[in-house]
Image 1 (cartoon, helix red, strand yellow):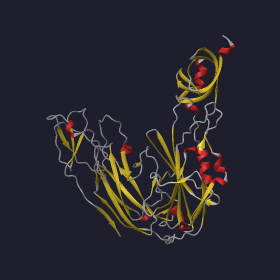
Image 2: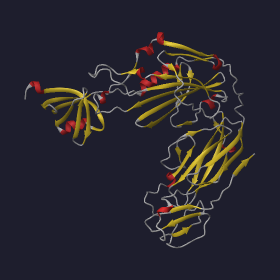
Image 3: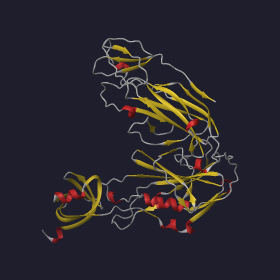
Image 4: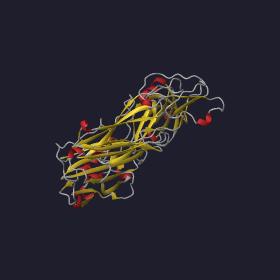
Length: 475
Protein backbone atom coordinates (compact mmCIF):
# COMPACT_ATOMS: atom_id res chain seq x y z
CA UNK A 1 0.00 0.00 0.00
CA UNK A 2 1.39 3.38 -0.99
CA UNK A 3 0.68 6.68 0.75
CA UNK A 4 -0.74 7.92 -2.54
CA UNK A 5 -3.48 5.26 -2.23
CA UNK A 6 -4.88 6.89 0.90
CA UNK A 7 -8.05 8.87 0.30
CA UNK A 8 -10.35 11.17 2.25
CA UNK A 9 -13.65 11.84 0.47
CA UNK A 10 -16.78 13.72 1.63
CA UNK A 11 -20.00 12.48 0.15
CA UNK A 12 -23.27 10.61 0.56
CA UNK A 13 -23.53 7.19 2.23
CA UNK A 14 -26.63 5.10 1.58
CA UNK A 15 -27.80 1.54 2.16
CA UNK A 16 -28.32 -0.85 5.06
CA UNK A 17 -27.70 -4.41 6.29
CA UNK A 18 -24.11 -4.45 5.10
CA UNK A 19 -24.91 -3.29 1.56
CA UNK A 20 -23.79 0.29 1.06
CA UNK A 21 -23.19 2.74 -1.71
CA UNK A 22 -21.10 5.87 -1.53
CA UNK A 23 -21.06 8.87 -3.83
CA UNK A 24 -18.65 11.77 -3.48
CA UNK A 25 -19.90 15.32 -3.75
CA UNK A 26 -18.33 15.40 -7.21
CA UNK A 27 -20.50 12.50 -8.30
CA UNK A 28 -17.89 9.69 -8.24
CA UNK A 29 -19.37 6.41 -6.97
CA UNK A 30 -17.42 3.94 -4.78
CA UNK A 31 -17.89 0.55 -3.17
CA UNK A 32 -16.92 0.46 0.50
CA UNK A 33 -15.18 -2.54 2.07
CA UNK A 34 -13.68 -3.03 5.48
CA UNK A 35 -15.16 -3.02 8.96
CA UNK A 36 -18.86 -3.71 8.56
CA UNK A 37 -19.64 -2.51 12.09
CA UNK A 38 -18.04 0.83 11.34
CA UNK A 39 -20.00 1.26 8.15
CA UNK A 40 -23.27 0.09 9.74
CA UNK A 41 -22.89 2.74 12.39
CA UNK A 42 -23.18 5.45 9.75
CA UNK A 43 -25.52 3.79 7.28
CA UNK A 44 -29.22 2.99 7.61
CA UNK A 45 -32.43 4.31 6.18
CA UNK A 46 -33.36 6.81 4.87
CA UNK A 47 -30.33 7.03 2.61
CA UNK A 48 -28.25 10.11 2.08
CA UNK A 49 -26.13 10.39 5.24
CA UNK A 50 -23.39 12.99 4.86
CA UNK A 51 -20.02 11.53 5.82
CA UNK A 52 -16.31 11.83 5.17
CA UNK A 53 -14.82 8.43 4.29
CA UNK A 54 -11.11 7.89 4.96
CA UNK A 55 -9.27 4.80 3.83
CA UNK A 56 -7.28 3.19 1.06
CA UNK A 57 -8.18 3.22 -2.60
CA UNK A 58 -7.70 -0.43 -3.56
CA UNK A 59 -9.06 0.11 -7.07
CA UNK A 60 -10.50 3.11 -8.94
CA UNK A 61 -13.96 2.35 -7.51
CA UNK A 62 -13.26 0.62 -4.16
CA UNK A 63 -12.28 2.17 -0.81
CA UNK A 64 -11.09 0.02 2.09
CA UNK A 65 -12.50 2.01 5.01
CA UNK A 66 -10.33 3.06 7.96
CA UNK A 67 -12.70 5.64 9.44
CA UNK A 68 -15.99 7.37 8.75
CA UNK A 69 -16.87 10.78 10.16
CA UNK A 70 -20.37 12.22 10.16
CA UNK A 71 -20.81 15.56 8.42
CA UNK A 72 -23.74 17.89 9.13
CA UNK A 73 -26.36 18.28 6.43
CA UNK A 74 -25.91 21.82 5.11
CA UNK A 75 -28.81 24.21 5.63
CA UNK A 76 -29.95 26.96 3.31
CA UNK A 77 -29.81 30.54 4.58
CA UNK A 78 -31.69 33.72 3.75
CA UNK A 79 -29.90 35.91 1.25
CA UNK A 80 -28.22 39.05 2.61
CA UNK A 81 -30.65 41.40 0.84
CA UNK A 82 -33.42 40.37 3.27
CA UNK A 83 -31.55 42.16 6.03
CA UNK A 84 -30.97 45.44 4.17
CA UNK A 85 -33.82 48.02 4.34
CA UNK A 86 -32.51 49.68 1.19
CA UNK A 87 -33.56 46.54 -0.70
CA UNK A 88 -37.20 46.80 0.42
CA UNK A 89 -40.22 48.48 -1.18
CA UNK A 90 -43.19 50.11 0.69
CA UNK A 91 -46.86 49.27 0.11
CA UNK A 92 -49.86 51.11 1.58
CA UNK A 93 -53.53 50.06 1.41
CA UNK A 94 -55.52 52.74 3.26
CA UNK A 95 -58.81 51.14 2.27
CA UNK A 96 -57.90 48.13 4.39
CA UNK A 97 -55.90 50.00 7.03
CA UNK A 98 -52.56 48.28 6.45
CA UNK A 99 -49.08 49.37 5.36
CA UNK A 100 -45.87 47.34 5.04
CA UNK A 101 -42.55 46.95 3.25
CA UNK A 102 -41.30 43.86 1.42
CA UNK A 103 -38.02 42.91 -0.29
CA UNK A 104 -37.87 44.24 -3.83
CA UNK A 105 -37.29 40.73 -5.12
CA UNK A 106 -40.82 39.80 -3.93
CA UNK A 107 -42.94 40.67 -6.96
CA UNK A 108 -46.69 41.22 -7.02
CA UNK A 109 -48.42 38.16 -8.49
CA UNK A 110 -51.90 37.07 -9.46
CA UNK A 111 -50.85 33.61 -10.59
CA UNK A 112 -50.89 31.64 -7.35
CA UNK A 113 -54.45 30.37 -7.30
CA UNK A 114 -53.52 27.62 -4.84
CA UNK A 115 -52.97 29.96 -1.91
CA UNK A 116 -56.41 30.58 -0.41
CA UNK A 117 -57.78 32.12 2.76
CA UNK A 118 -58.56 29.98 5.80
CA UNK A 119 -61.03 32.15 7.72
CA UNK A 120 -63.56 30.41 10.01
CA UNK A 121 -66.31 31.37 7.55
CA UNK A 122 -66.29 30.58 3.83
CA UNK A 123 -67.73 33.90 2.64
CA UNK A 124 -66.59 37.52 2.70
CA UNK A 125 -62.83 37.10 2.17
CA UNK A 126 -61.15 39.88 0.17
CA UNK A 127 -57.72 39.44 -1.41
CA UNK A 128 -55.64 42.55 -0.71
CA UNK A 129 -52.48 41.40 -2.53
CA UNK A 130 -50.32 38.39 -3.30
CA UNK A 131 -46.54 38.37 -3.68
CA UNK A 132 -44.20 35.73 -5.08
CA UNK A 133 -41.25 34.54 -2.98
CA UNK A 134 -38.52 33.72 -5.54
CA UNK A 135 -36.50 30.52 -5.43
CA UNK A 136 -33.22 32.32 -4.75
CA UNK A 137 -34.50 33.82 -1.48
CA UNK A 138 -32.52 31.00 0.16
CA UNK A 139 -29.02 29.96 -0.93
CA UNK A 140 -26.68 27.11 -0.06
CA UNK A 141 -23.27 27.57 1.59
CA UNK A 142 -20.45 27.59 -0.96
CA UNK A 143 -17.83 25.64 0.93
CA UNK A 144 -18.76 22.03 0.09
CA UNK A 145 -16.68 21.65 -3.04
CA UNK A 146 -19.85 21.37 -5.08
CA UNK A 147 -20.29 24.96 -6.16
CA UNK A 148 -23.53 26.84 -5.54
CA UNK A 149 -26.13 24.11 -5.14
CA UNK A 150 -29.88 24.54 -5.63
CA UNK A 151 -31.95 24.48 -2.47
CA UNK A 152 -34.89 22.14 -1.90
CA UNK A 153 -37.14 25.21 -2.13
CA UNK A 154 -38.59 26.20 -5.47
CA UNK A 155 -40.43 29.30 -4.33
CA UNK A 156 -43.52 30.35 -2.49
CA UNK A 157 -46.02 33.14 -1.95
CA UNK A 158 -47.26 35.63 0.58
CA UNK A 159 -50.94 36.56 0.53
CA UNK A 160 -52.85 39.14 2.56
CA UNK A 161 -56.61 38.70 3.03
CA UNK A 162 -59.22 40.58 5.06
CA UNK A 163 -62.74 39.55 6.03
CA UNK A 164 -65.09 42.40 7.03
CA UNK A 165 -67.77 39.88 8.01
CA UNK A 166 -65.90 38.72 11.13
CA UNK A 167 -66.70 41.18 13.90
CA UNK A 168 -64.66 40.11 16.94
CA UNK A 169 -61.18 38.96 17.89
CA UNK A 170 -62.01 35.49 19.31
CA UNK A 171 -63.81 34.55 16.08
CA UNK A 172 -60.96 35.95 13.96
CA UNK A 173 -58.51 33.79 15.95
CA UNK A 174 -60.22 30.68 14.57
CA UNK A 175 -59.64 29.07 11.16
CA UNK A 176 -61.71 27.26 8.59
CA UNK A 177 -59.63 24.12 9.15
CA UNK A 178 -56.89 23.53 11.68
CA UNK A 179 -55.25 21.00 13.97
CA UNK A 180 -56.61 21.79 17.46
CA UNK A 181 -53.45 20.40 19.08
CA UNK A 182 -51.11 22.77 17.23
CA UNK A 183 -52.38 26.36 17.22
CA UNK A 184 -49.87 28.76 18.81
CA UNK A 185 -50.44 32.48 19.44
CA UNK A 186 -47.20 34.25 18.53
CA UNK A 187 -46.67 37.95 19.26
CA UNK A 188 -44.68 39.74 16.54
CA UNK A 189 -43.68 43.37 17.06
CA UNK A 190 -46.45 43.79 19.63
CA UNK A 191 -49.18 42.26 17.43
CA UNK A 192 -50.81 39.04 18.62
CA UNK A 193 -51.60 36.42 15.99
CA UNK A 194 -53.19 33.01 15.99
CA UNK A 195 -51.36 30.53 13.77
CA UNK A 196 -52.02 27.21 12.12
CA UNK A 197 -50.20 25.21 9.45
CA UNK A 198 -51.13 22.77 6.72
CA UNK A 199 -49.27 20.76 4.13
CA UNK A 200 -49.86 18.62 1.08
CA UNK A 201 -47.83 16.33 -1.18
CA UNK A 202 -48.25 15.65 -4.86
CA UNK A 203 -46.01 14.19 -7.56
CA UNK A 204 -42.98 14.16 -5.27
CA UNK A 205 -43.44 17.81 -4.33
CA UNK A 206 -44.29 19.03 -0.85
CA UNK A 207 -46.24 22.20 -0.14
CA UNK A 208 -46.47 23.99 3.19
CA UNK A 209 -48.89 26.71 4.33
CA UNK A 210 -48.68 28.89 7.43
CA UNK A 211 -51.70 31.03 8.36
CA UNK A 212 -51.55 34.04 10.71
CA UNK A 213 -54.80 35.72 11.80
CA UNK A 214 -55.12 38.98 13.76
CA UNK A 215 -58.01 41.33 14.60
CA UNK A 216 -57.08 45.03 14.33
CA UNK A 217 -59.31 48.13 14.40
CA UNK A 218 -62.47 46.11 13.81
CA UNK A 219 -61.11 44.13 10.85
CA UNK A 220 -59.92 40.52 10.63
CA UNK A 221 -56.62 40.06 8.73
CA UNK A 222 -55.01 36.87 7.51
CA UNK A 223 -51.43 36.45 6.24
CA UNK A 224 -50.64 33.25 4.38
CA UNK A 225 -47.11 32.03 3.64
CA UNK A 226 -46.72 29.16 1.19
CA UNK A 227 -43.58 27.24 0.28
CA UNK A 228 -42.74 24.34 -1.97
CA UNK A 229 -39.87 21.92 -2.10
CA UNK A 230 -38.75 18.49 -3.28
CA UNK A 231 -36.59 15.86 -1.66
CA UNK A 232 -33.19 15.84 -3.40
CA UNK A 233 -31.94 12.60 -4.93
CA UNK A 234 -29.03 11.39 -2.76
CA UNK A 235 -27.65 9.40 -5.73
CA UNK A 236 -27.22 12.50 -7.87
CA UNK A 237 -23.93 14.43 -7.76
CA UNK A 238 -23.78 16.18 -4.40
CA UNK A 239 -27.32 14.91 -3.82
CA UNK A 240 -27.03 14.55 -0.07
CA UNK A 241 -25.33 17.96 0.12
CA UNK A 242 -28.32 19.81 -1.36
CA UNK A 243 -29.20 22.13 1.51
CA UNK A 244 -32.41 21.60 3.37
CA UNK A 245 -34.64 24.53 4.17
CA UNK A 246 -34.88 24.27 7.93
CA UNK A 247 -38.18 25.21 9.56
CA UNK A 248 -36.35 27.72 11.71
CA UNK A 249 -34.96 29.55 8.70
CA UNK A 250 -38.35 29.86 7.02
CA UNK A 251 -39.84 30.94 10.36
CA UNK A 252 -37.20 33.67 10.46
CA UNK A 253 -38.38 34.90 7.06
CA UNK A 254 -42.02 34.94 8.23
CA UNK A 255 -41.16 36.82 11.41
CA UNK A 256 -39.06 39.33 9.46
CA UNK A 257 -41.96 39.99 7.08
CA UNK A 258 -44.63 40.26 9.80
CA UNK A 259 -42.51 42.80 11.67
CA UNK A 260 -42.95 45.20 8.73
CA UNK A 261 -46.75 45.46 8.99
CA UNK A 262 -48.57 48.33 10.67
CA UNK A 263 -52.32 48.88 11.03
CA UNK A 264 -54.62 51.90 10.95
CA UNK A 265 -58.37 52.45 10.87
CA UNK A 266 -59.72 50.84 7.66
CA UNK A 267 -61.96 52.79 5.31
CA UNK A 268 -64.20 49.86 4.38
CA UNK A 269 -67.36 49.07 6.34
CA UNK A 270 -66.95 46.24 8.84
CA UNK A 271 -69.57 44.09 10.55
CA UNK A 272 -71.24 45.53 13.65
CA UNK A 273 -70.04 43.58 16.71
CA UNK A 274 -72.64 41.63 18.63
CA UNK A 275 -72.43 41.35 22.39
CA UNK A 276 -70.37 38.47 23.79
CA UNK A 277 -73.25 37.64 26.12
CA UNK A 278 -75.63 37.10 23.21
CA UNK A 279 -76.55 33.42 23.04
CA UNK A 280 -76.60 32.21 19.42
CA UNK A 281 -79.53 30.17 18.17
CA UNK A 282 -79.93 27.57 15.43
CA UNK A 283 -83.01 28.65 13.50
CA UNK A 284 -83.02 25.70 11.10
CA UNK A 285 -80.95 22.57 10.40
CA UNK A 286 -81.84 20.29 7.49
CA UNK A 287 -80.44 17.13 5.87
CA UNK A 288 -81.40 15.50 2.60
CA UNK A 289 -81.59 12.60 2.12
CA UNK A 290 -81.54 10.82 5.50
CA UNK A 291 -79.45 7.91 4.24
CA UNK A 292 -75.96 7.82 2.76
CA UNK A 293 -75.23 5.34 -0.01
CA UNK A 294 -71.96 5.49 -1.89
CA UNK A 295 -71.16 7.33 -4.08
CA UNK A 296 -73.93 9.70 -3.02
CA UNK A 297 -73.54 12.04 -0.07
CA UNK A 298 -75.88 14.11 2.08
CA UNK A 299 -76.50 17.84 1.85
CA UNK A 300 -76.83 19.72 5.13
CA UNK A 301 -78.09 23.29 5.35
CA UNK A 302 -78.68 25.61 8.28
CA UNK A 303 -79.42 29.13 9.45
CA UNK A 304 -78.54 30.74 12.79
CA UNK A 305 -78.89 33.96 14.76
CA UNK A 306 -76.00 35.77 16.53
CA UNK A 307 -73.50 33.01 15.62
CA UNK A 308 -70.01 33.85 14.36
CA UNK A 309 -69.56 30.38 12.85
CA UNK A 310 -70.78 26.81 13.32
CA UNK A 311 -69.17 23.41 13.57
CA UNK A 312 -70.44 19.94 12.63
CA UNK A 313 -69.57 16.96 14.82
CA UNK A 314 -70.30 13.26 14.35
CA UNK A 315 -71.02 10.33 16.66
CA UNK A 316 -71.71 6.76 15.53
CA UNK A 317 -73.76 3.81 16.68
CA UNK A 318 -72.19 0.64 15.29
CA UNK A 319 -74.13 -1.82 13.17
CA UNK A 320 -73.44 -5.54 12.74
CA UNK A 321 -69.82 -6.46 12.11
CA UNK A 322 -68.87 -8.32 8.94
CA UNK A 323 -68.16 -11.92 10.01
CA UNK A 324 -65.94 -13.21 7.21
CA UNK A 325 -64.41 -10.61 4.97
CA UNK A 326 -60.85 -10.74 3.68
CA UNK A 327 -59.92 -7.45 5.33
CA UNK A 328 -59.47 -6.74 9.03
CA UNK A 329 -62.48 -5.21 10.73
CA UNK A 330 -61.69 -1.59 11.61
CA UNK A 331 -64.78 -0.89 13.68
CA UNK A 332 -65.49 2.81 13.90
CA UNK A 333 -62.21 3.47 12.07
CA UNK A 334 -63.91 2.06 8.97
CA UNK A 335 -66.42 4.91 8.96
CA UNK A 336 -65.24 7.68 6.63
CA UNK A 337 -66.66 11.19 6.78
CA UNK A 338 -65.52 13.95 4.45
CA UNK A 339 -66.86 17.47 4.42
CA UNK A 340 -66.52 19.28 1.10
CA UNK A 341 -63.03 20.73 0.87
CA UNK A 342 -61.89 19.11 4.11
CA UNK A 343 -59.80 16.13 5.15
CA UNK A 344 -61.19 12.74 6.14
CA UNK A 345 -62.71 12.61 9.60
CA UNK A 346 -64.18 9.78 11.60
CA UNK A 347 -66.68 8.86 14.27
CA UNK A 348 -64.38 8.47 17.24
CA UNK A 349 -62.15 5.57 16.15
CA UNK A 350 -58.67 5.35 17.62
CA UNK A 351 -57.08 6.17 14.25
CA UNK A 352 -59.18 9.29 13.67
CA UNK A 353 -56.97 12.33 13.45
CA UNK A 354 -58.13 15.52 15.12
CA UNK A 355 -59.22 18.43 12.98
CA UNK A 356 -61.31 21.51 13.68
CA UNK A 357 -63.51 22.59 10.75
CA UNK A 358 -65.66 25.73 10.99
CA UNK A 359 -68.33 27.01 8.63
CA UNK A 360 -70.36 30.14 7.98
CA UNK A 361 -73.35 30.77 10.27
CA UNK A 362 -75.83 30.48 7.37
CA UNK A 363 -74.71 28.00 4.74
CA UNK A 364 -74.96 24.50 3.29
CA UNK A 365 -72.49 21.66 2.93
CA UNK A 366 -72.17 18.31 1.16
CA UNK A 367 -70.82 15.50 3.33
CA UNK A 368 -69.70 12.12 1.98
CA UNK A 369 -69.96 9.04 4.20
CA UNK A 370 -68.46 5.58 3.87
CA UNK A 371 -69.16 2.38 5.81
CA UNK A 372 -66.62 -0.36 5.13
CA UNK A 373 -66.65 -2.23 8.45
CA UNK A 374 -70.25 -3.22 9.11
CA UNK A 375 -72.71 -5.38 7.21
CA UNK A 376 -75.70 -3.29 8.24
CA UNK A 377 -76.47 0.40 8.16
CA UNK A 378 -74.99 2.35 11.02
CA UNK A 379 -76.45 5.46 12.54
CA UNK A 380 -74.44 8.67 12.53
CA UNK A 381 -75.71 11.52 14.67
CA UNK A 382 -74.71 14.82 13.04
CA UNK A 383 -74.72 17.77 15.44
CA UNK A 384 -74.56 21.45 14.49
CA UNK A 385 -73.10 23.64 17.25
CA UNK A 386 -73.11 27.46 17.03
CA UNK A 387 -70.21 29.60 18.32
CA UNK A 388 -70.10 33.20 19.49
CA UNK A 389 -66.86 35.04 20.34
CA UNK A 390 -64.97 31.75 20.12
CA UNK A 391 -67.22 29.98 22.65
CA UNK A 392 -69.38 26.95 21.82
CA UNK A 393 -73.03 26.89 22.86
CA UNK A 394 -73.90 23.17 23.07
CA UNK A 395 -77.34 23.86 24.57
CA UNK A 396 -78.28 25.59 21.32
CA UNK A 397 -76.99 22.69 19.18
CA UNK A 398 -79.28 20.63 16.94
CA UNK A 399 -78.80 16.99 15.90
CA UNK A 400 -79.97 14.95 12.91
CA UNK A 401 -79.58 11.13 12.84
CA UNK A 402 -78.77 9.61 9.48
CA UNK A 403 -78.10 6.06 8.27
CA UNK A 404 -74.90 5.10 6.44
CA UNK A 405 -75.29 2.00 4.32
CA UNK A 406 -72.46 -0.48 3.73
CA UNK A 407 -70.01 -0.10 0.88
CA UNK A 408 -70.02 -2.67 -1.93
CA UNK A 409 -67.23 -5.22 -1.70
CA UNK A 410 -67.36 -6.27 -5.36
CA UNK A 411 -69.47 -5.54 -8.45
CA UNK A 412 -72.77 -7.38 -8.67
CA UNK A 413 -71.75 -8.66 -12.11
CA UNK A 414 -68.92 -10.66 -10.54
CA UNK A 415 -71.36 -13.15 -8.99
CA UNK A 416 -71.64 -16.36 -11.01
CA UNK A 417 -75.10 -16.74 -12.48
CA UNK A 418 -77.31 -19.35 -10.80
CA UNK A 419 -74.97 -19.63 -7.81
CA UNK A 420 -76.52 -16.85 -5.76
CA UNK A 421 -78.45 -17.58 -2.63
CA UNK A 422 -79.83 -14.10 -1.96
CA UNK A 423 -80.30 -13.12 1.65
CA UNK A 424 -82.00 -9.84 2.42
CA UNK A 425 -81.60 -8.73 6.00
CA UNK A 426 -83.52 -6.31 8.19
CA UNK A 427 -81.43 -4.97 11.05
CA UNK A 428 -81.81 -1.97 13.34
CA UNK A 429 -78.96 0.51 12.98
CA UNK A 430 -77.91 0.11 16.60
CA UNK A 431 -77.95 -3.69 16.87
CA UNK A 432 -74.90 -5.39 18.35
CA UNK A 433 -75.89 -8.93 17.37
CA UNK A 434 -73.86 -10.81 14.72
CA UNK A 435 -75.72 -11.90 11.59
CA UNK A 436 -75.83 -15.47 10.32
CA UNK A 437 -76.60 -16.40 6.73
CA UNK A 438 -77.77 -19.65 5.21
CA UNK A 439 -77.22 -20.36 1.51
CA UNK A 440 -80.47 -20.08 -0.40
CA UNK A 441 -82.56 -18.53 2.35
CA UNK A 442 -84.61 -15.38 1.86
CA UNK A 443 -85.78 -12.87 4.43
CA UNK A 444 -87.88 -9.74 3.94
CA UNK A 445 -85.90 -6.52 4.36
CA UNK A 446 -86.09 -2.76 4.59
CA UNK A 447 -84.60 -2.24 1.14
CA UNK A 448 -80.97 -3.36 1.18
CA UNK A 449 -79.80 -6.75 -0.04
CA UNK A 450 -76.91 -9.10 0.64
CA UNK A 451 -76.10 -11.61 -2.09
CA UNK A 452 -73.73 -14.48 -1.25
CA UNK A 453 -72.67 -17.03 -3.86
CA UNK A 454 -70.15 -19.04 -1.83
CA UNK A 455 -68.82 -18.72 1.72
CA UNK A 456 -65.53 -17.39 0.38
CA UNK A 457 -66.78 -14.80 -2.08
CA UNK A 458 -68.02 -12.20 0.40
CA UNK A 459 -71.11 -10.03 0.18
CA UNK A 460 -72.47 -8.09 -2.75
CA UNK A 461 -74.75 -5.18 -1.88
CA UNK A 462 -77.51 -3.92 -4.12
CA UNK A 463 -79.65 -0.88 -3.38
CA UNK A 464 -83.37 -1.18 -4.13
CA UNK A 465 -86.18 1.06 -2.90
CA UNK A 466 -83.97 2.74 -0.35
CA UNK A 467 -85.86 4.95 2.10
CA UNK A 468 -85.63 8.68 1.53
CA UNK A 469 -86.56 11.57 3.70
CA UNK A 470 -85.72 14.99 4.98
CA UNK A 471 -85.12 15.99 8.54
CA UNK A 472 -85.76 19.59 9.52
CA UNK A 473 -85.18 21.42 12.79
CA UNK A 474 -86.79 24.84 12.98
CA UNK A 475 -87.17 27.49 15.63
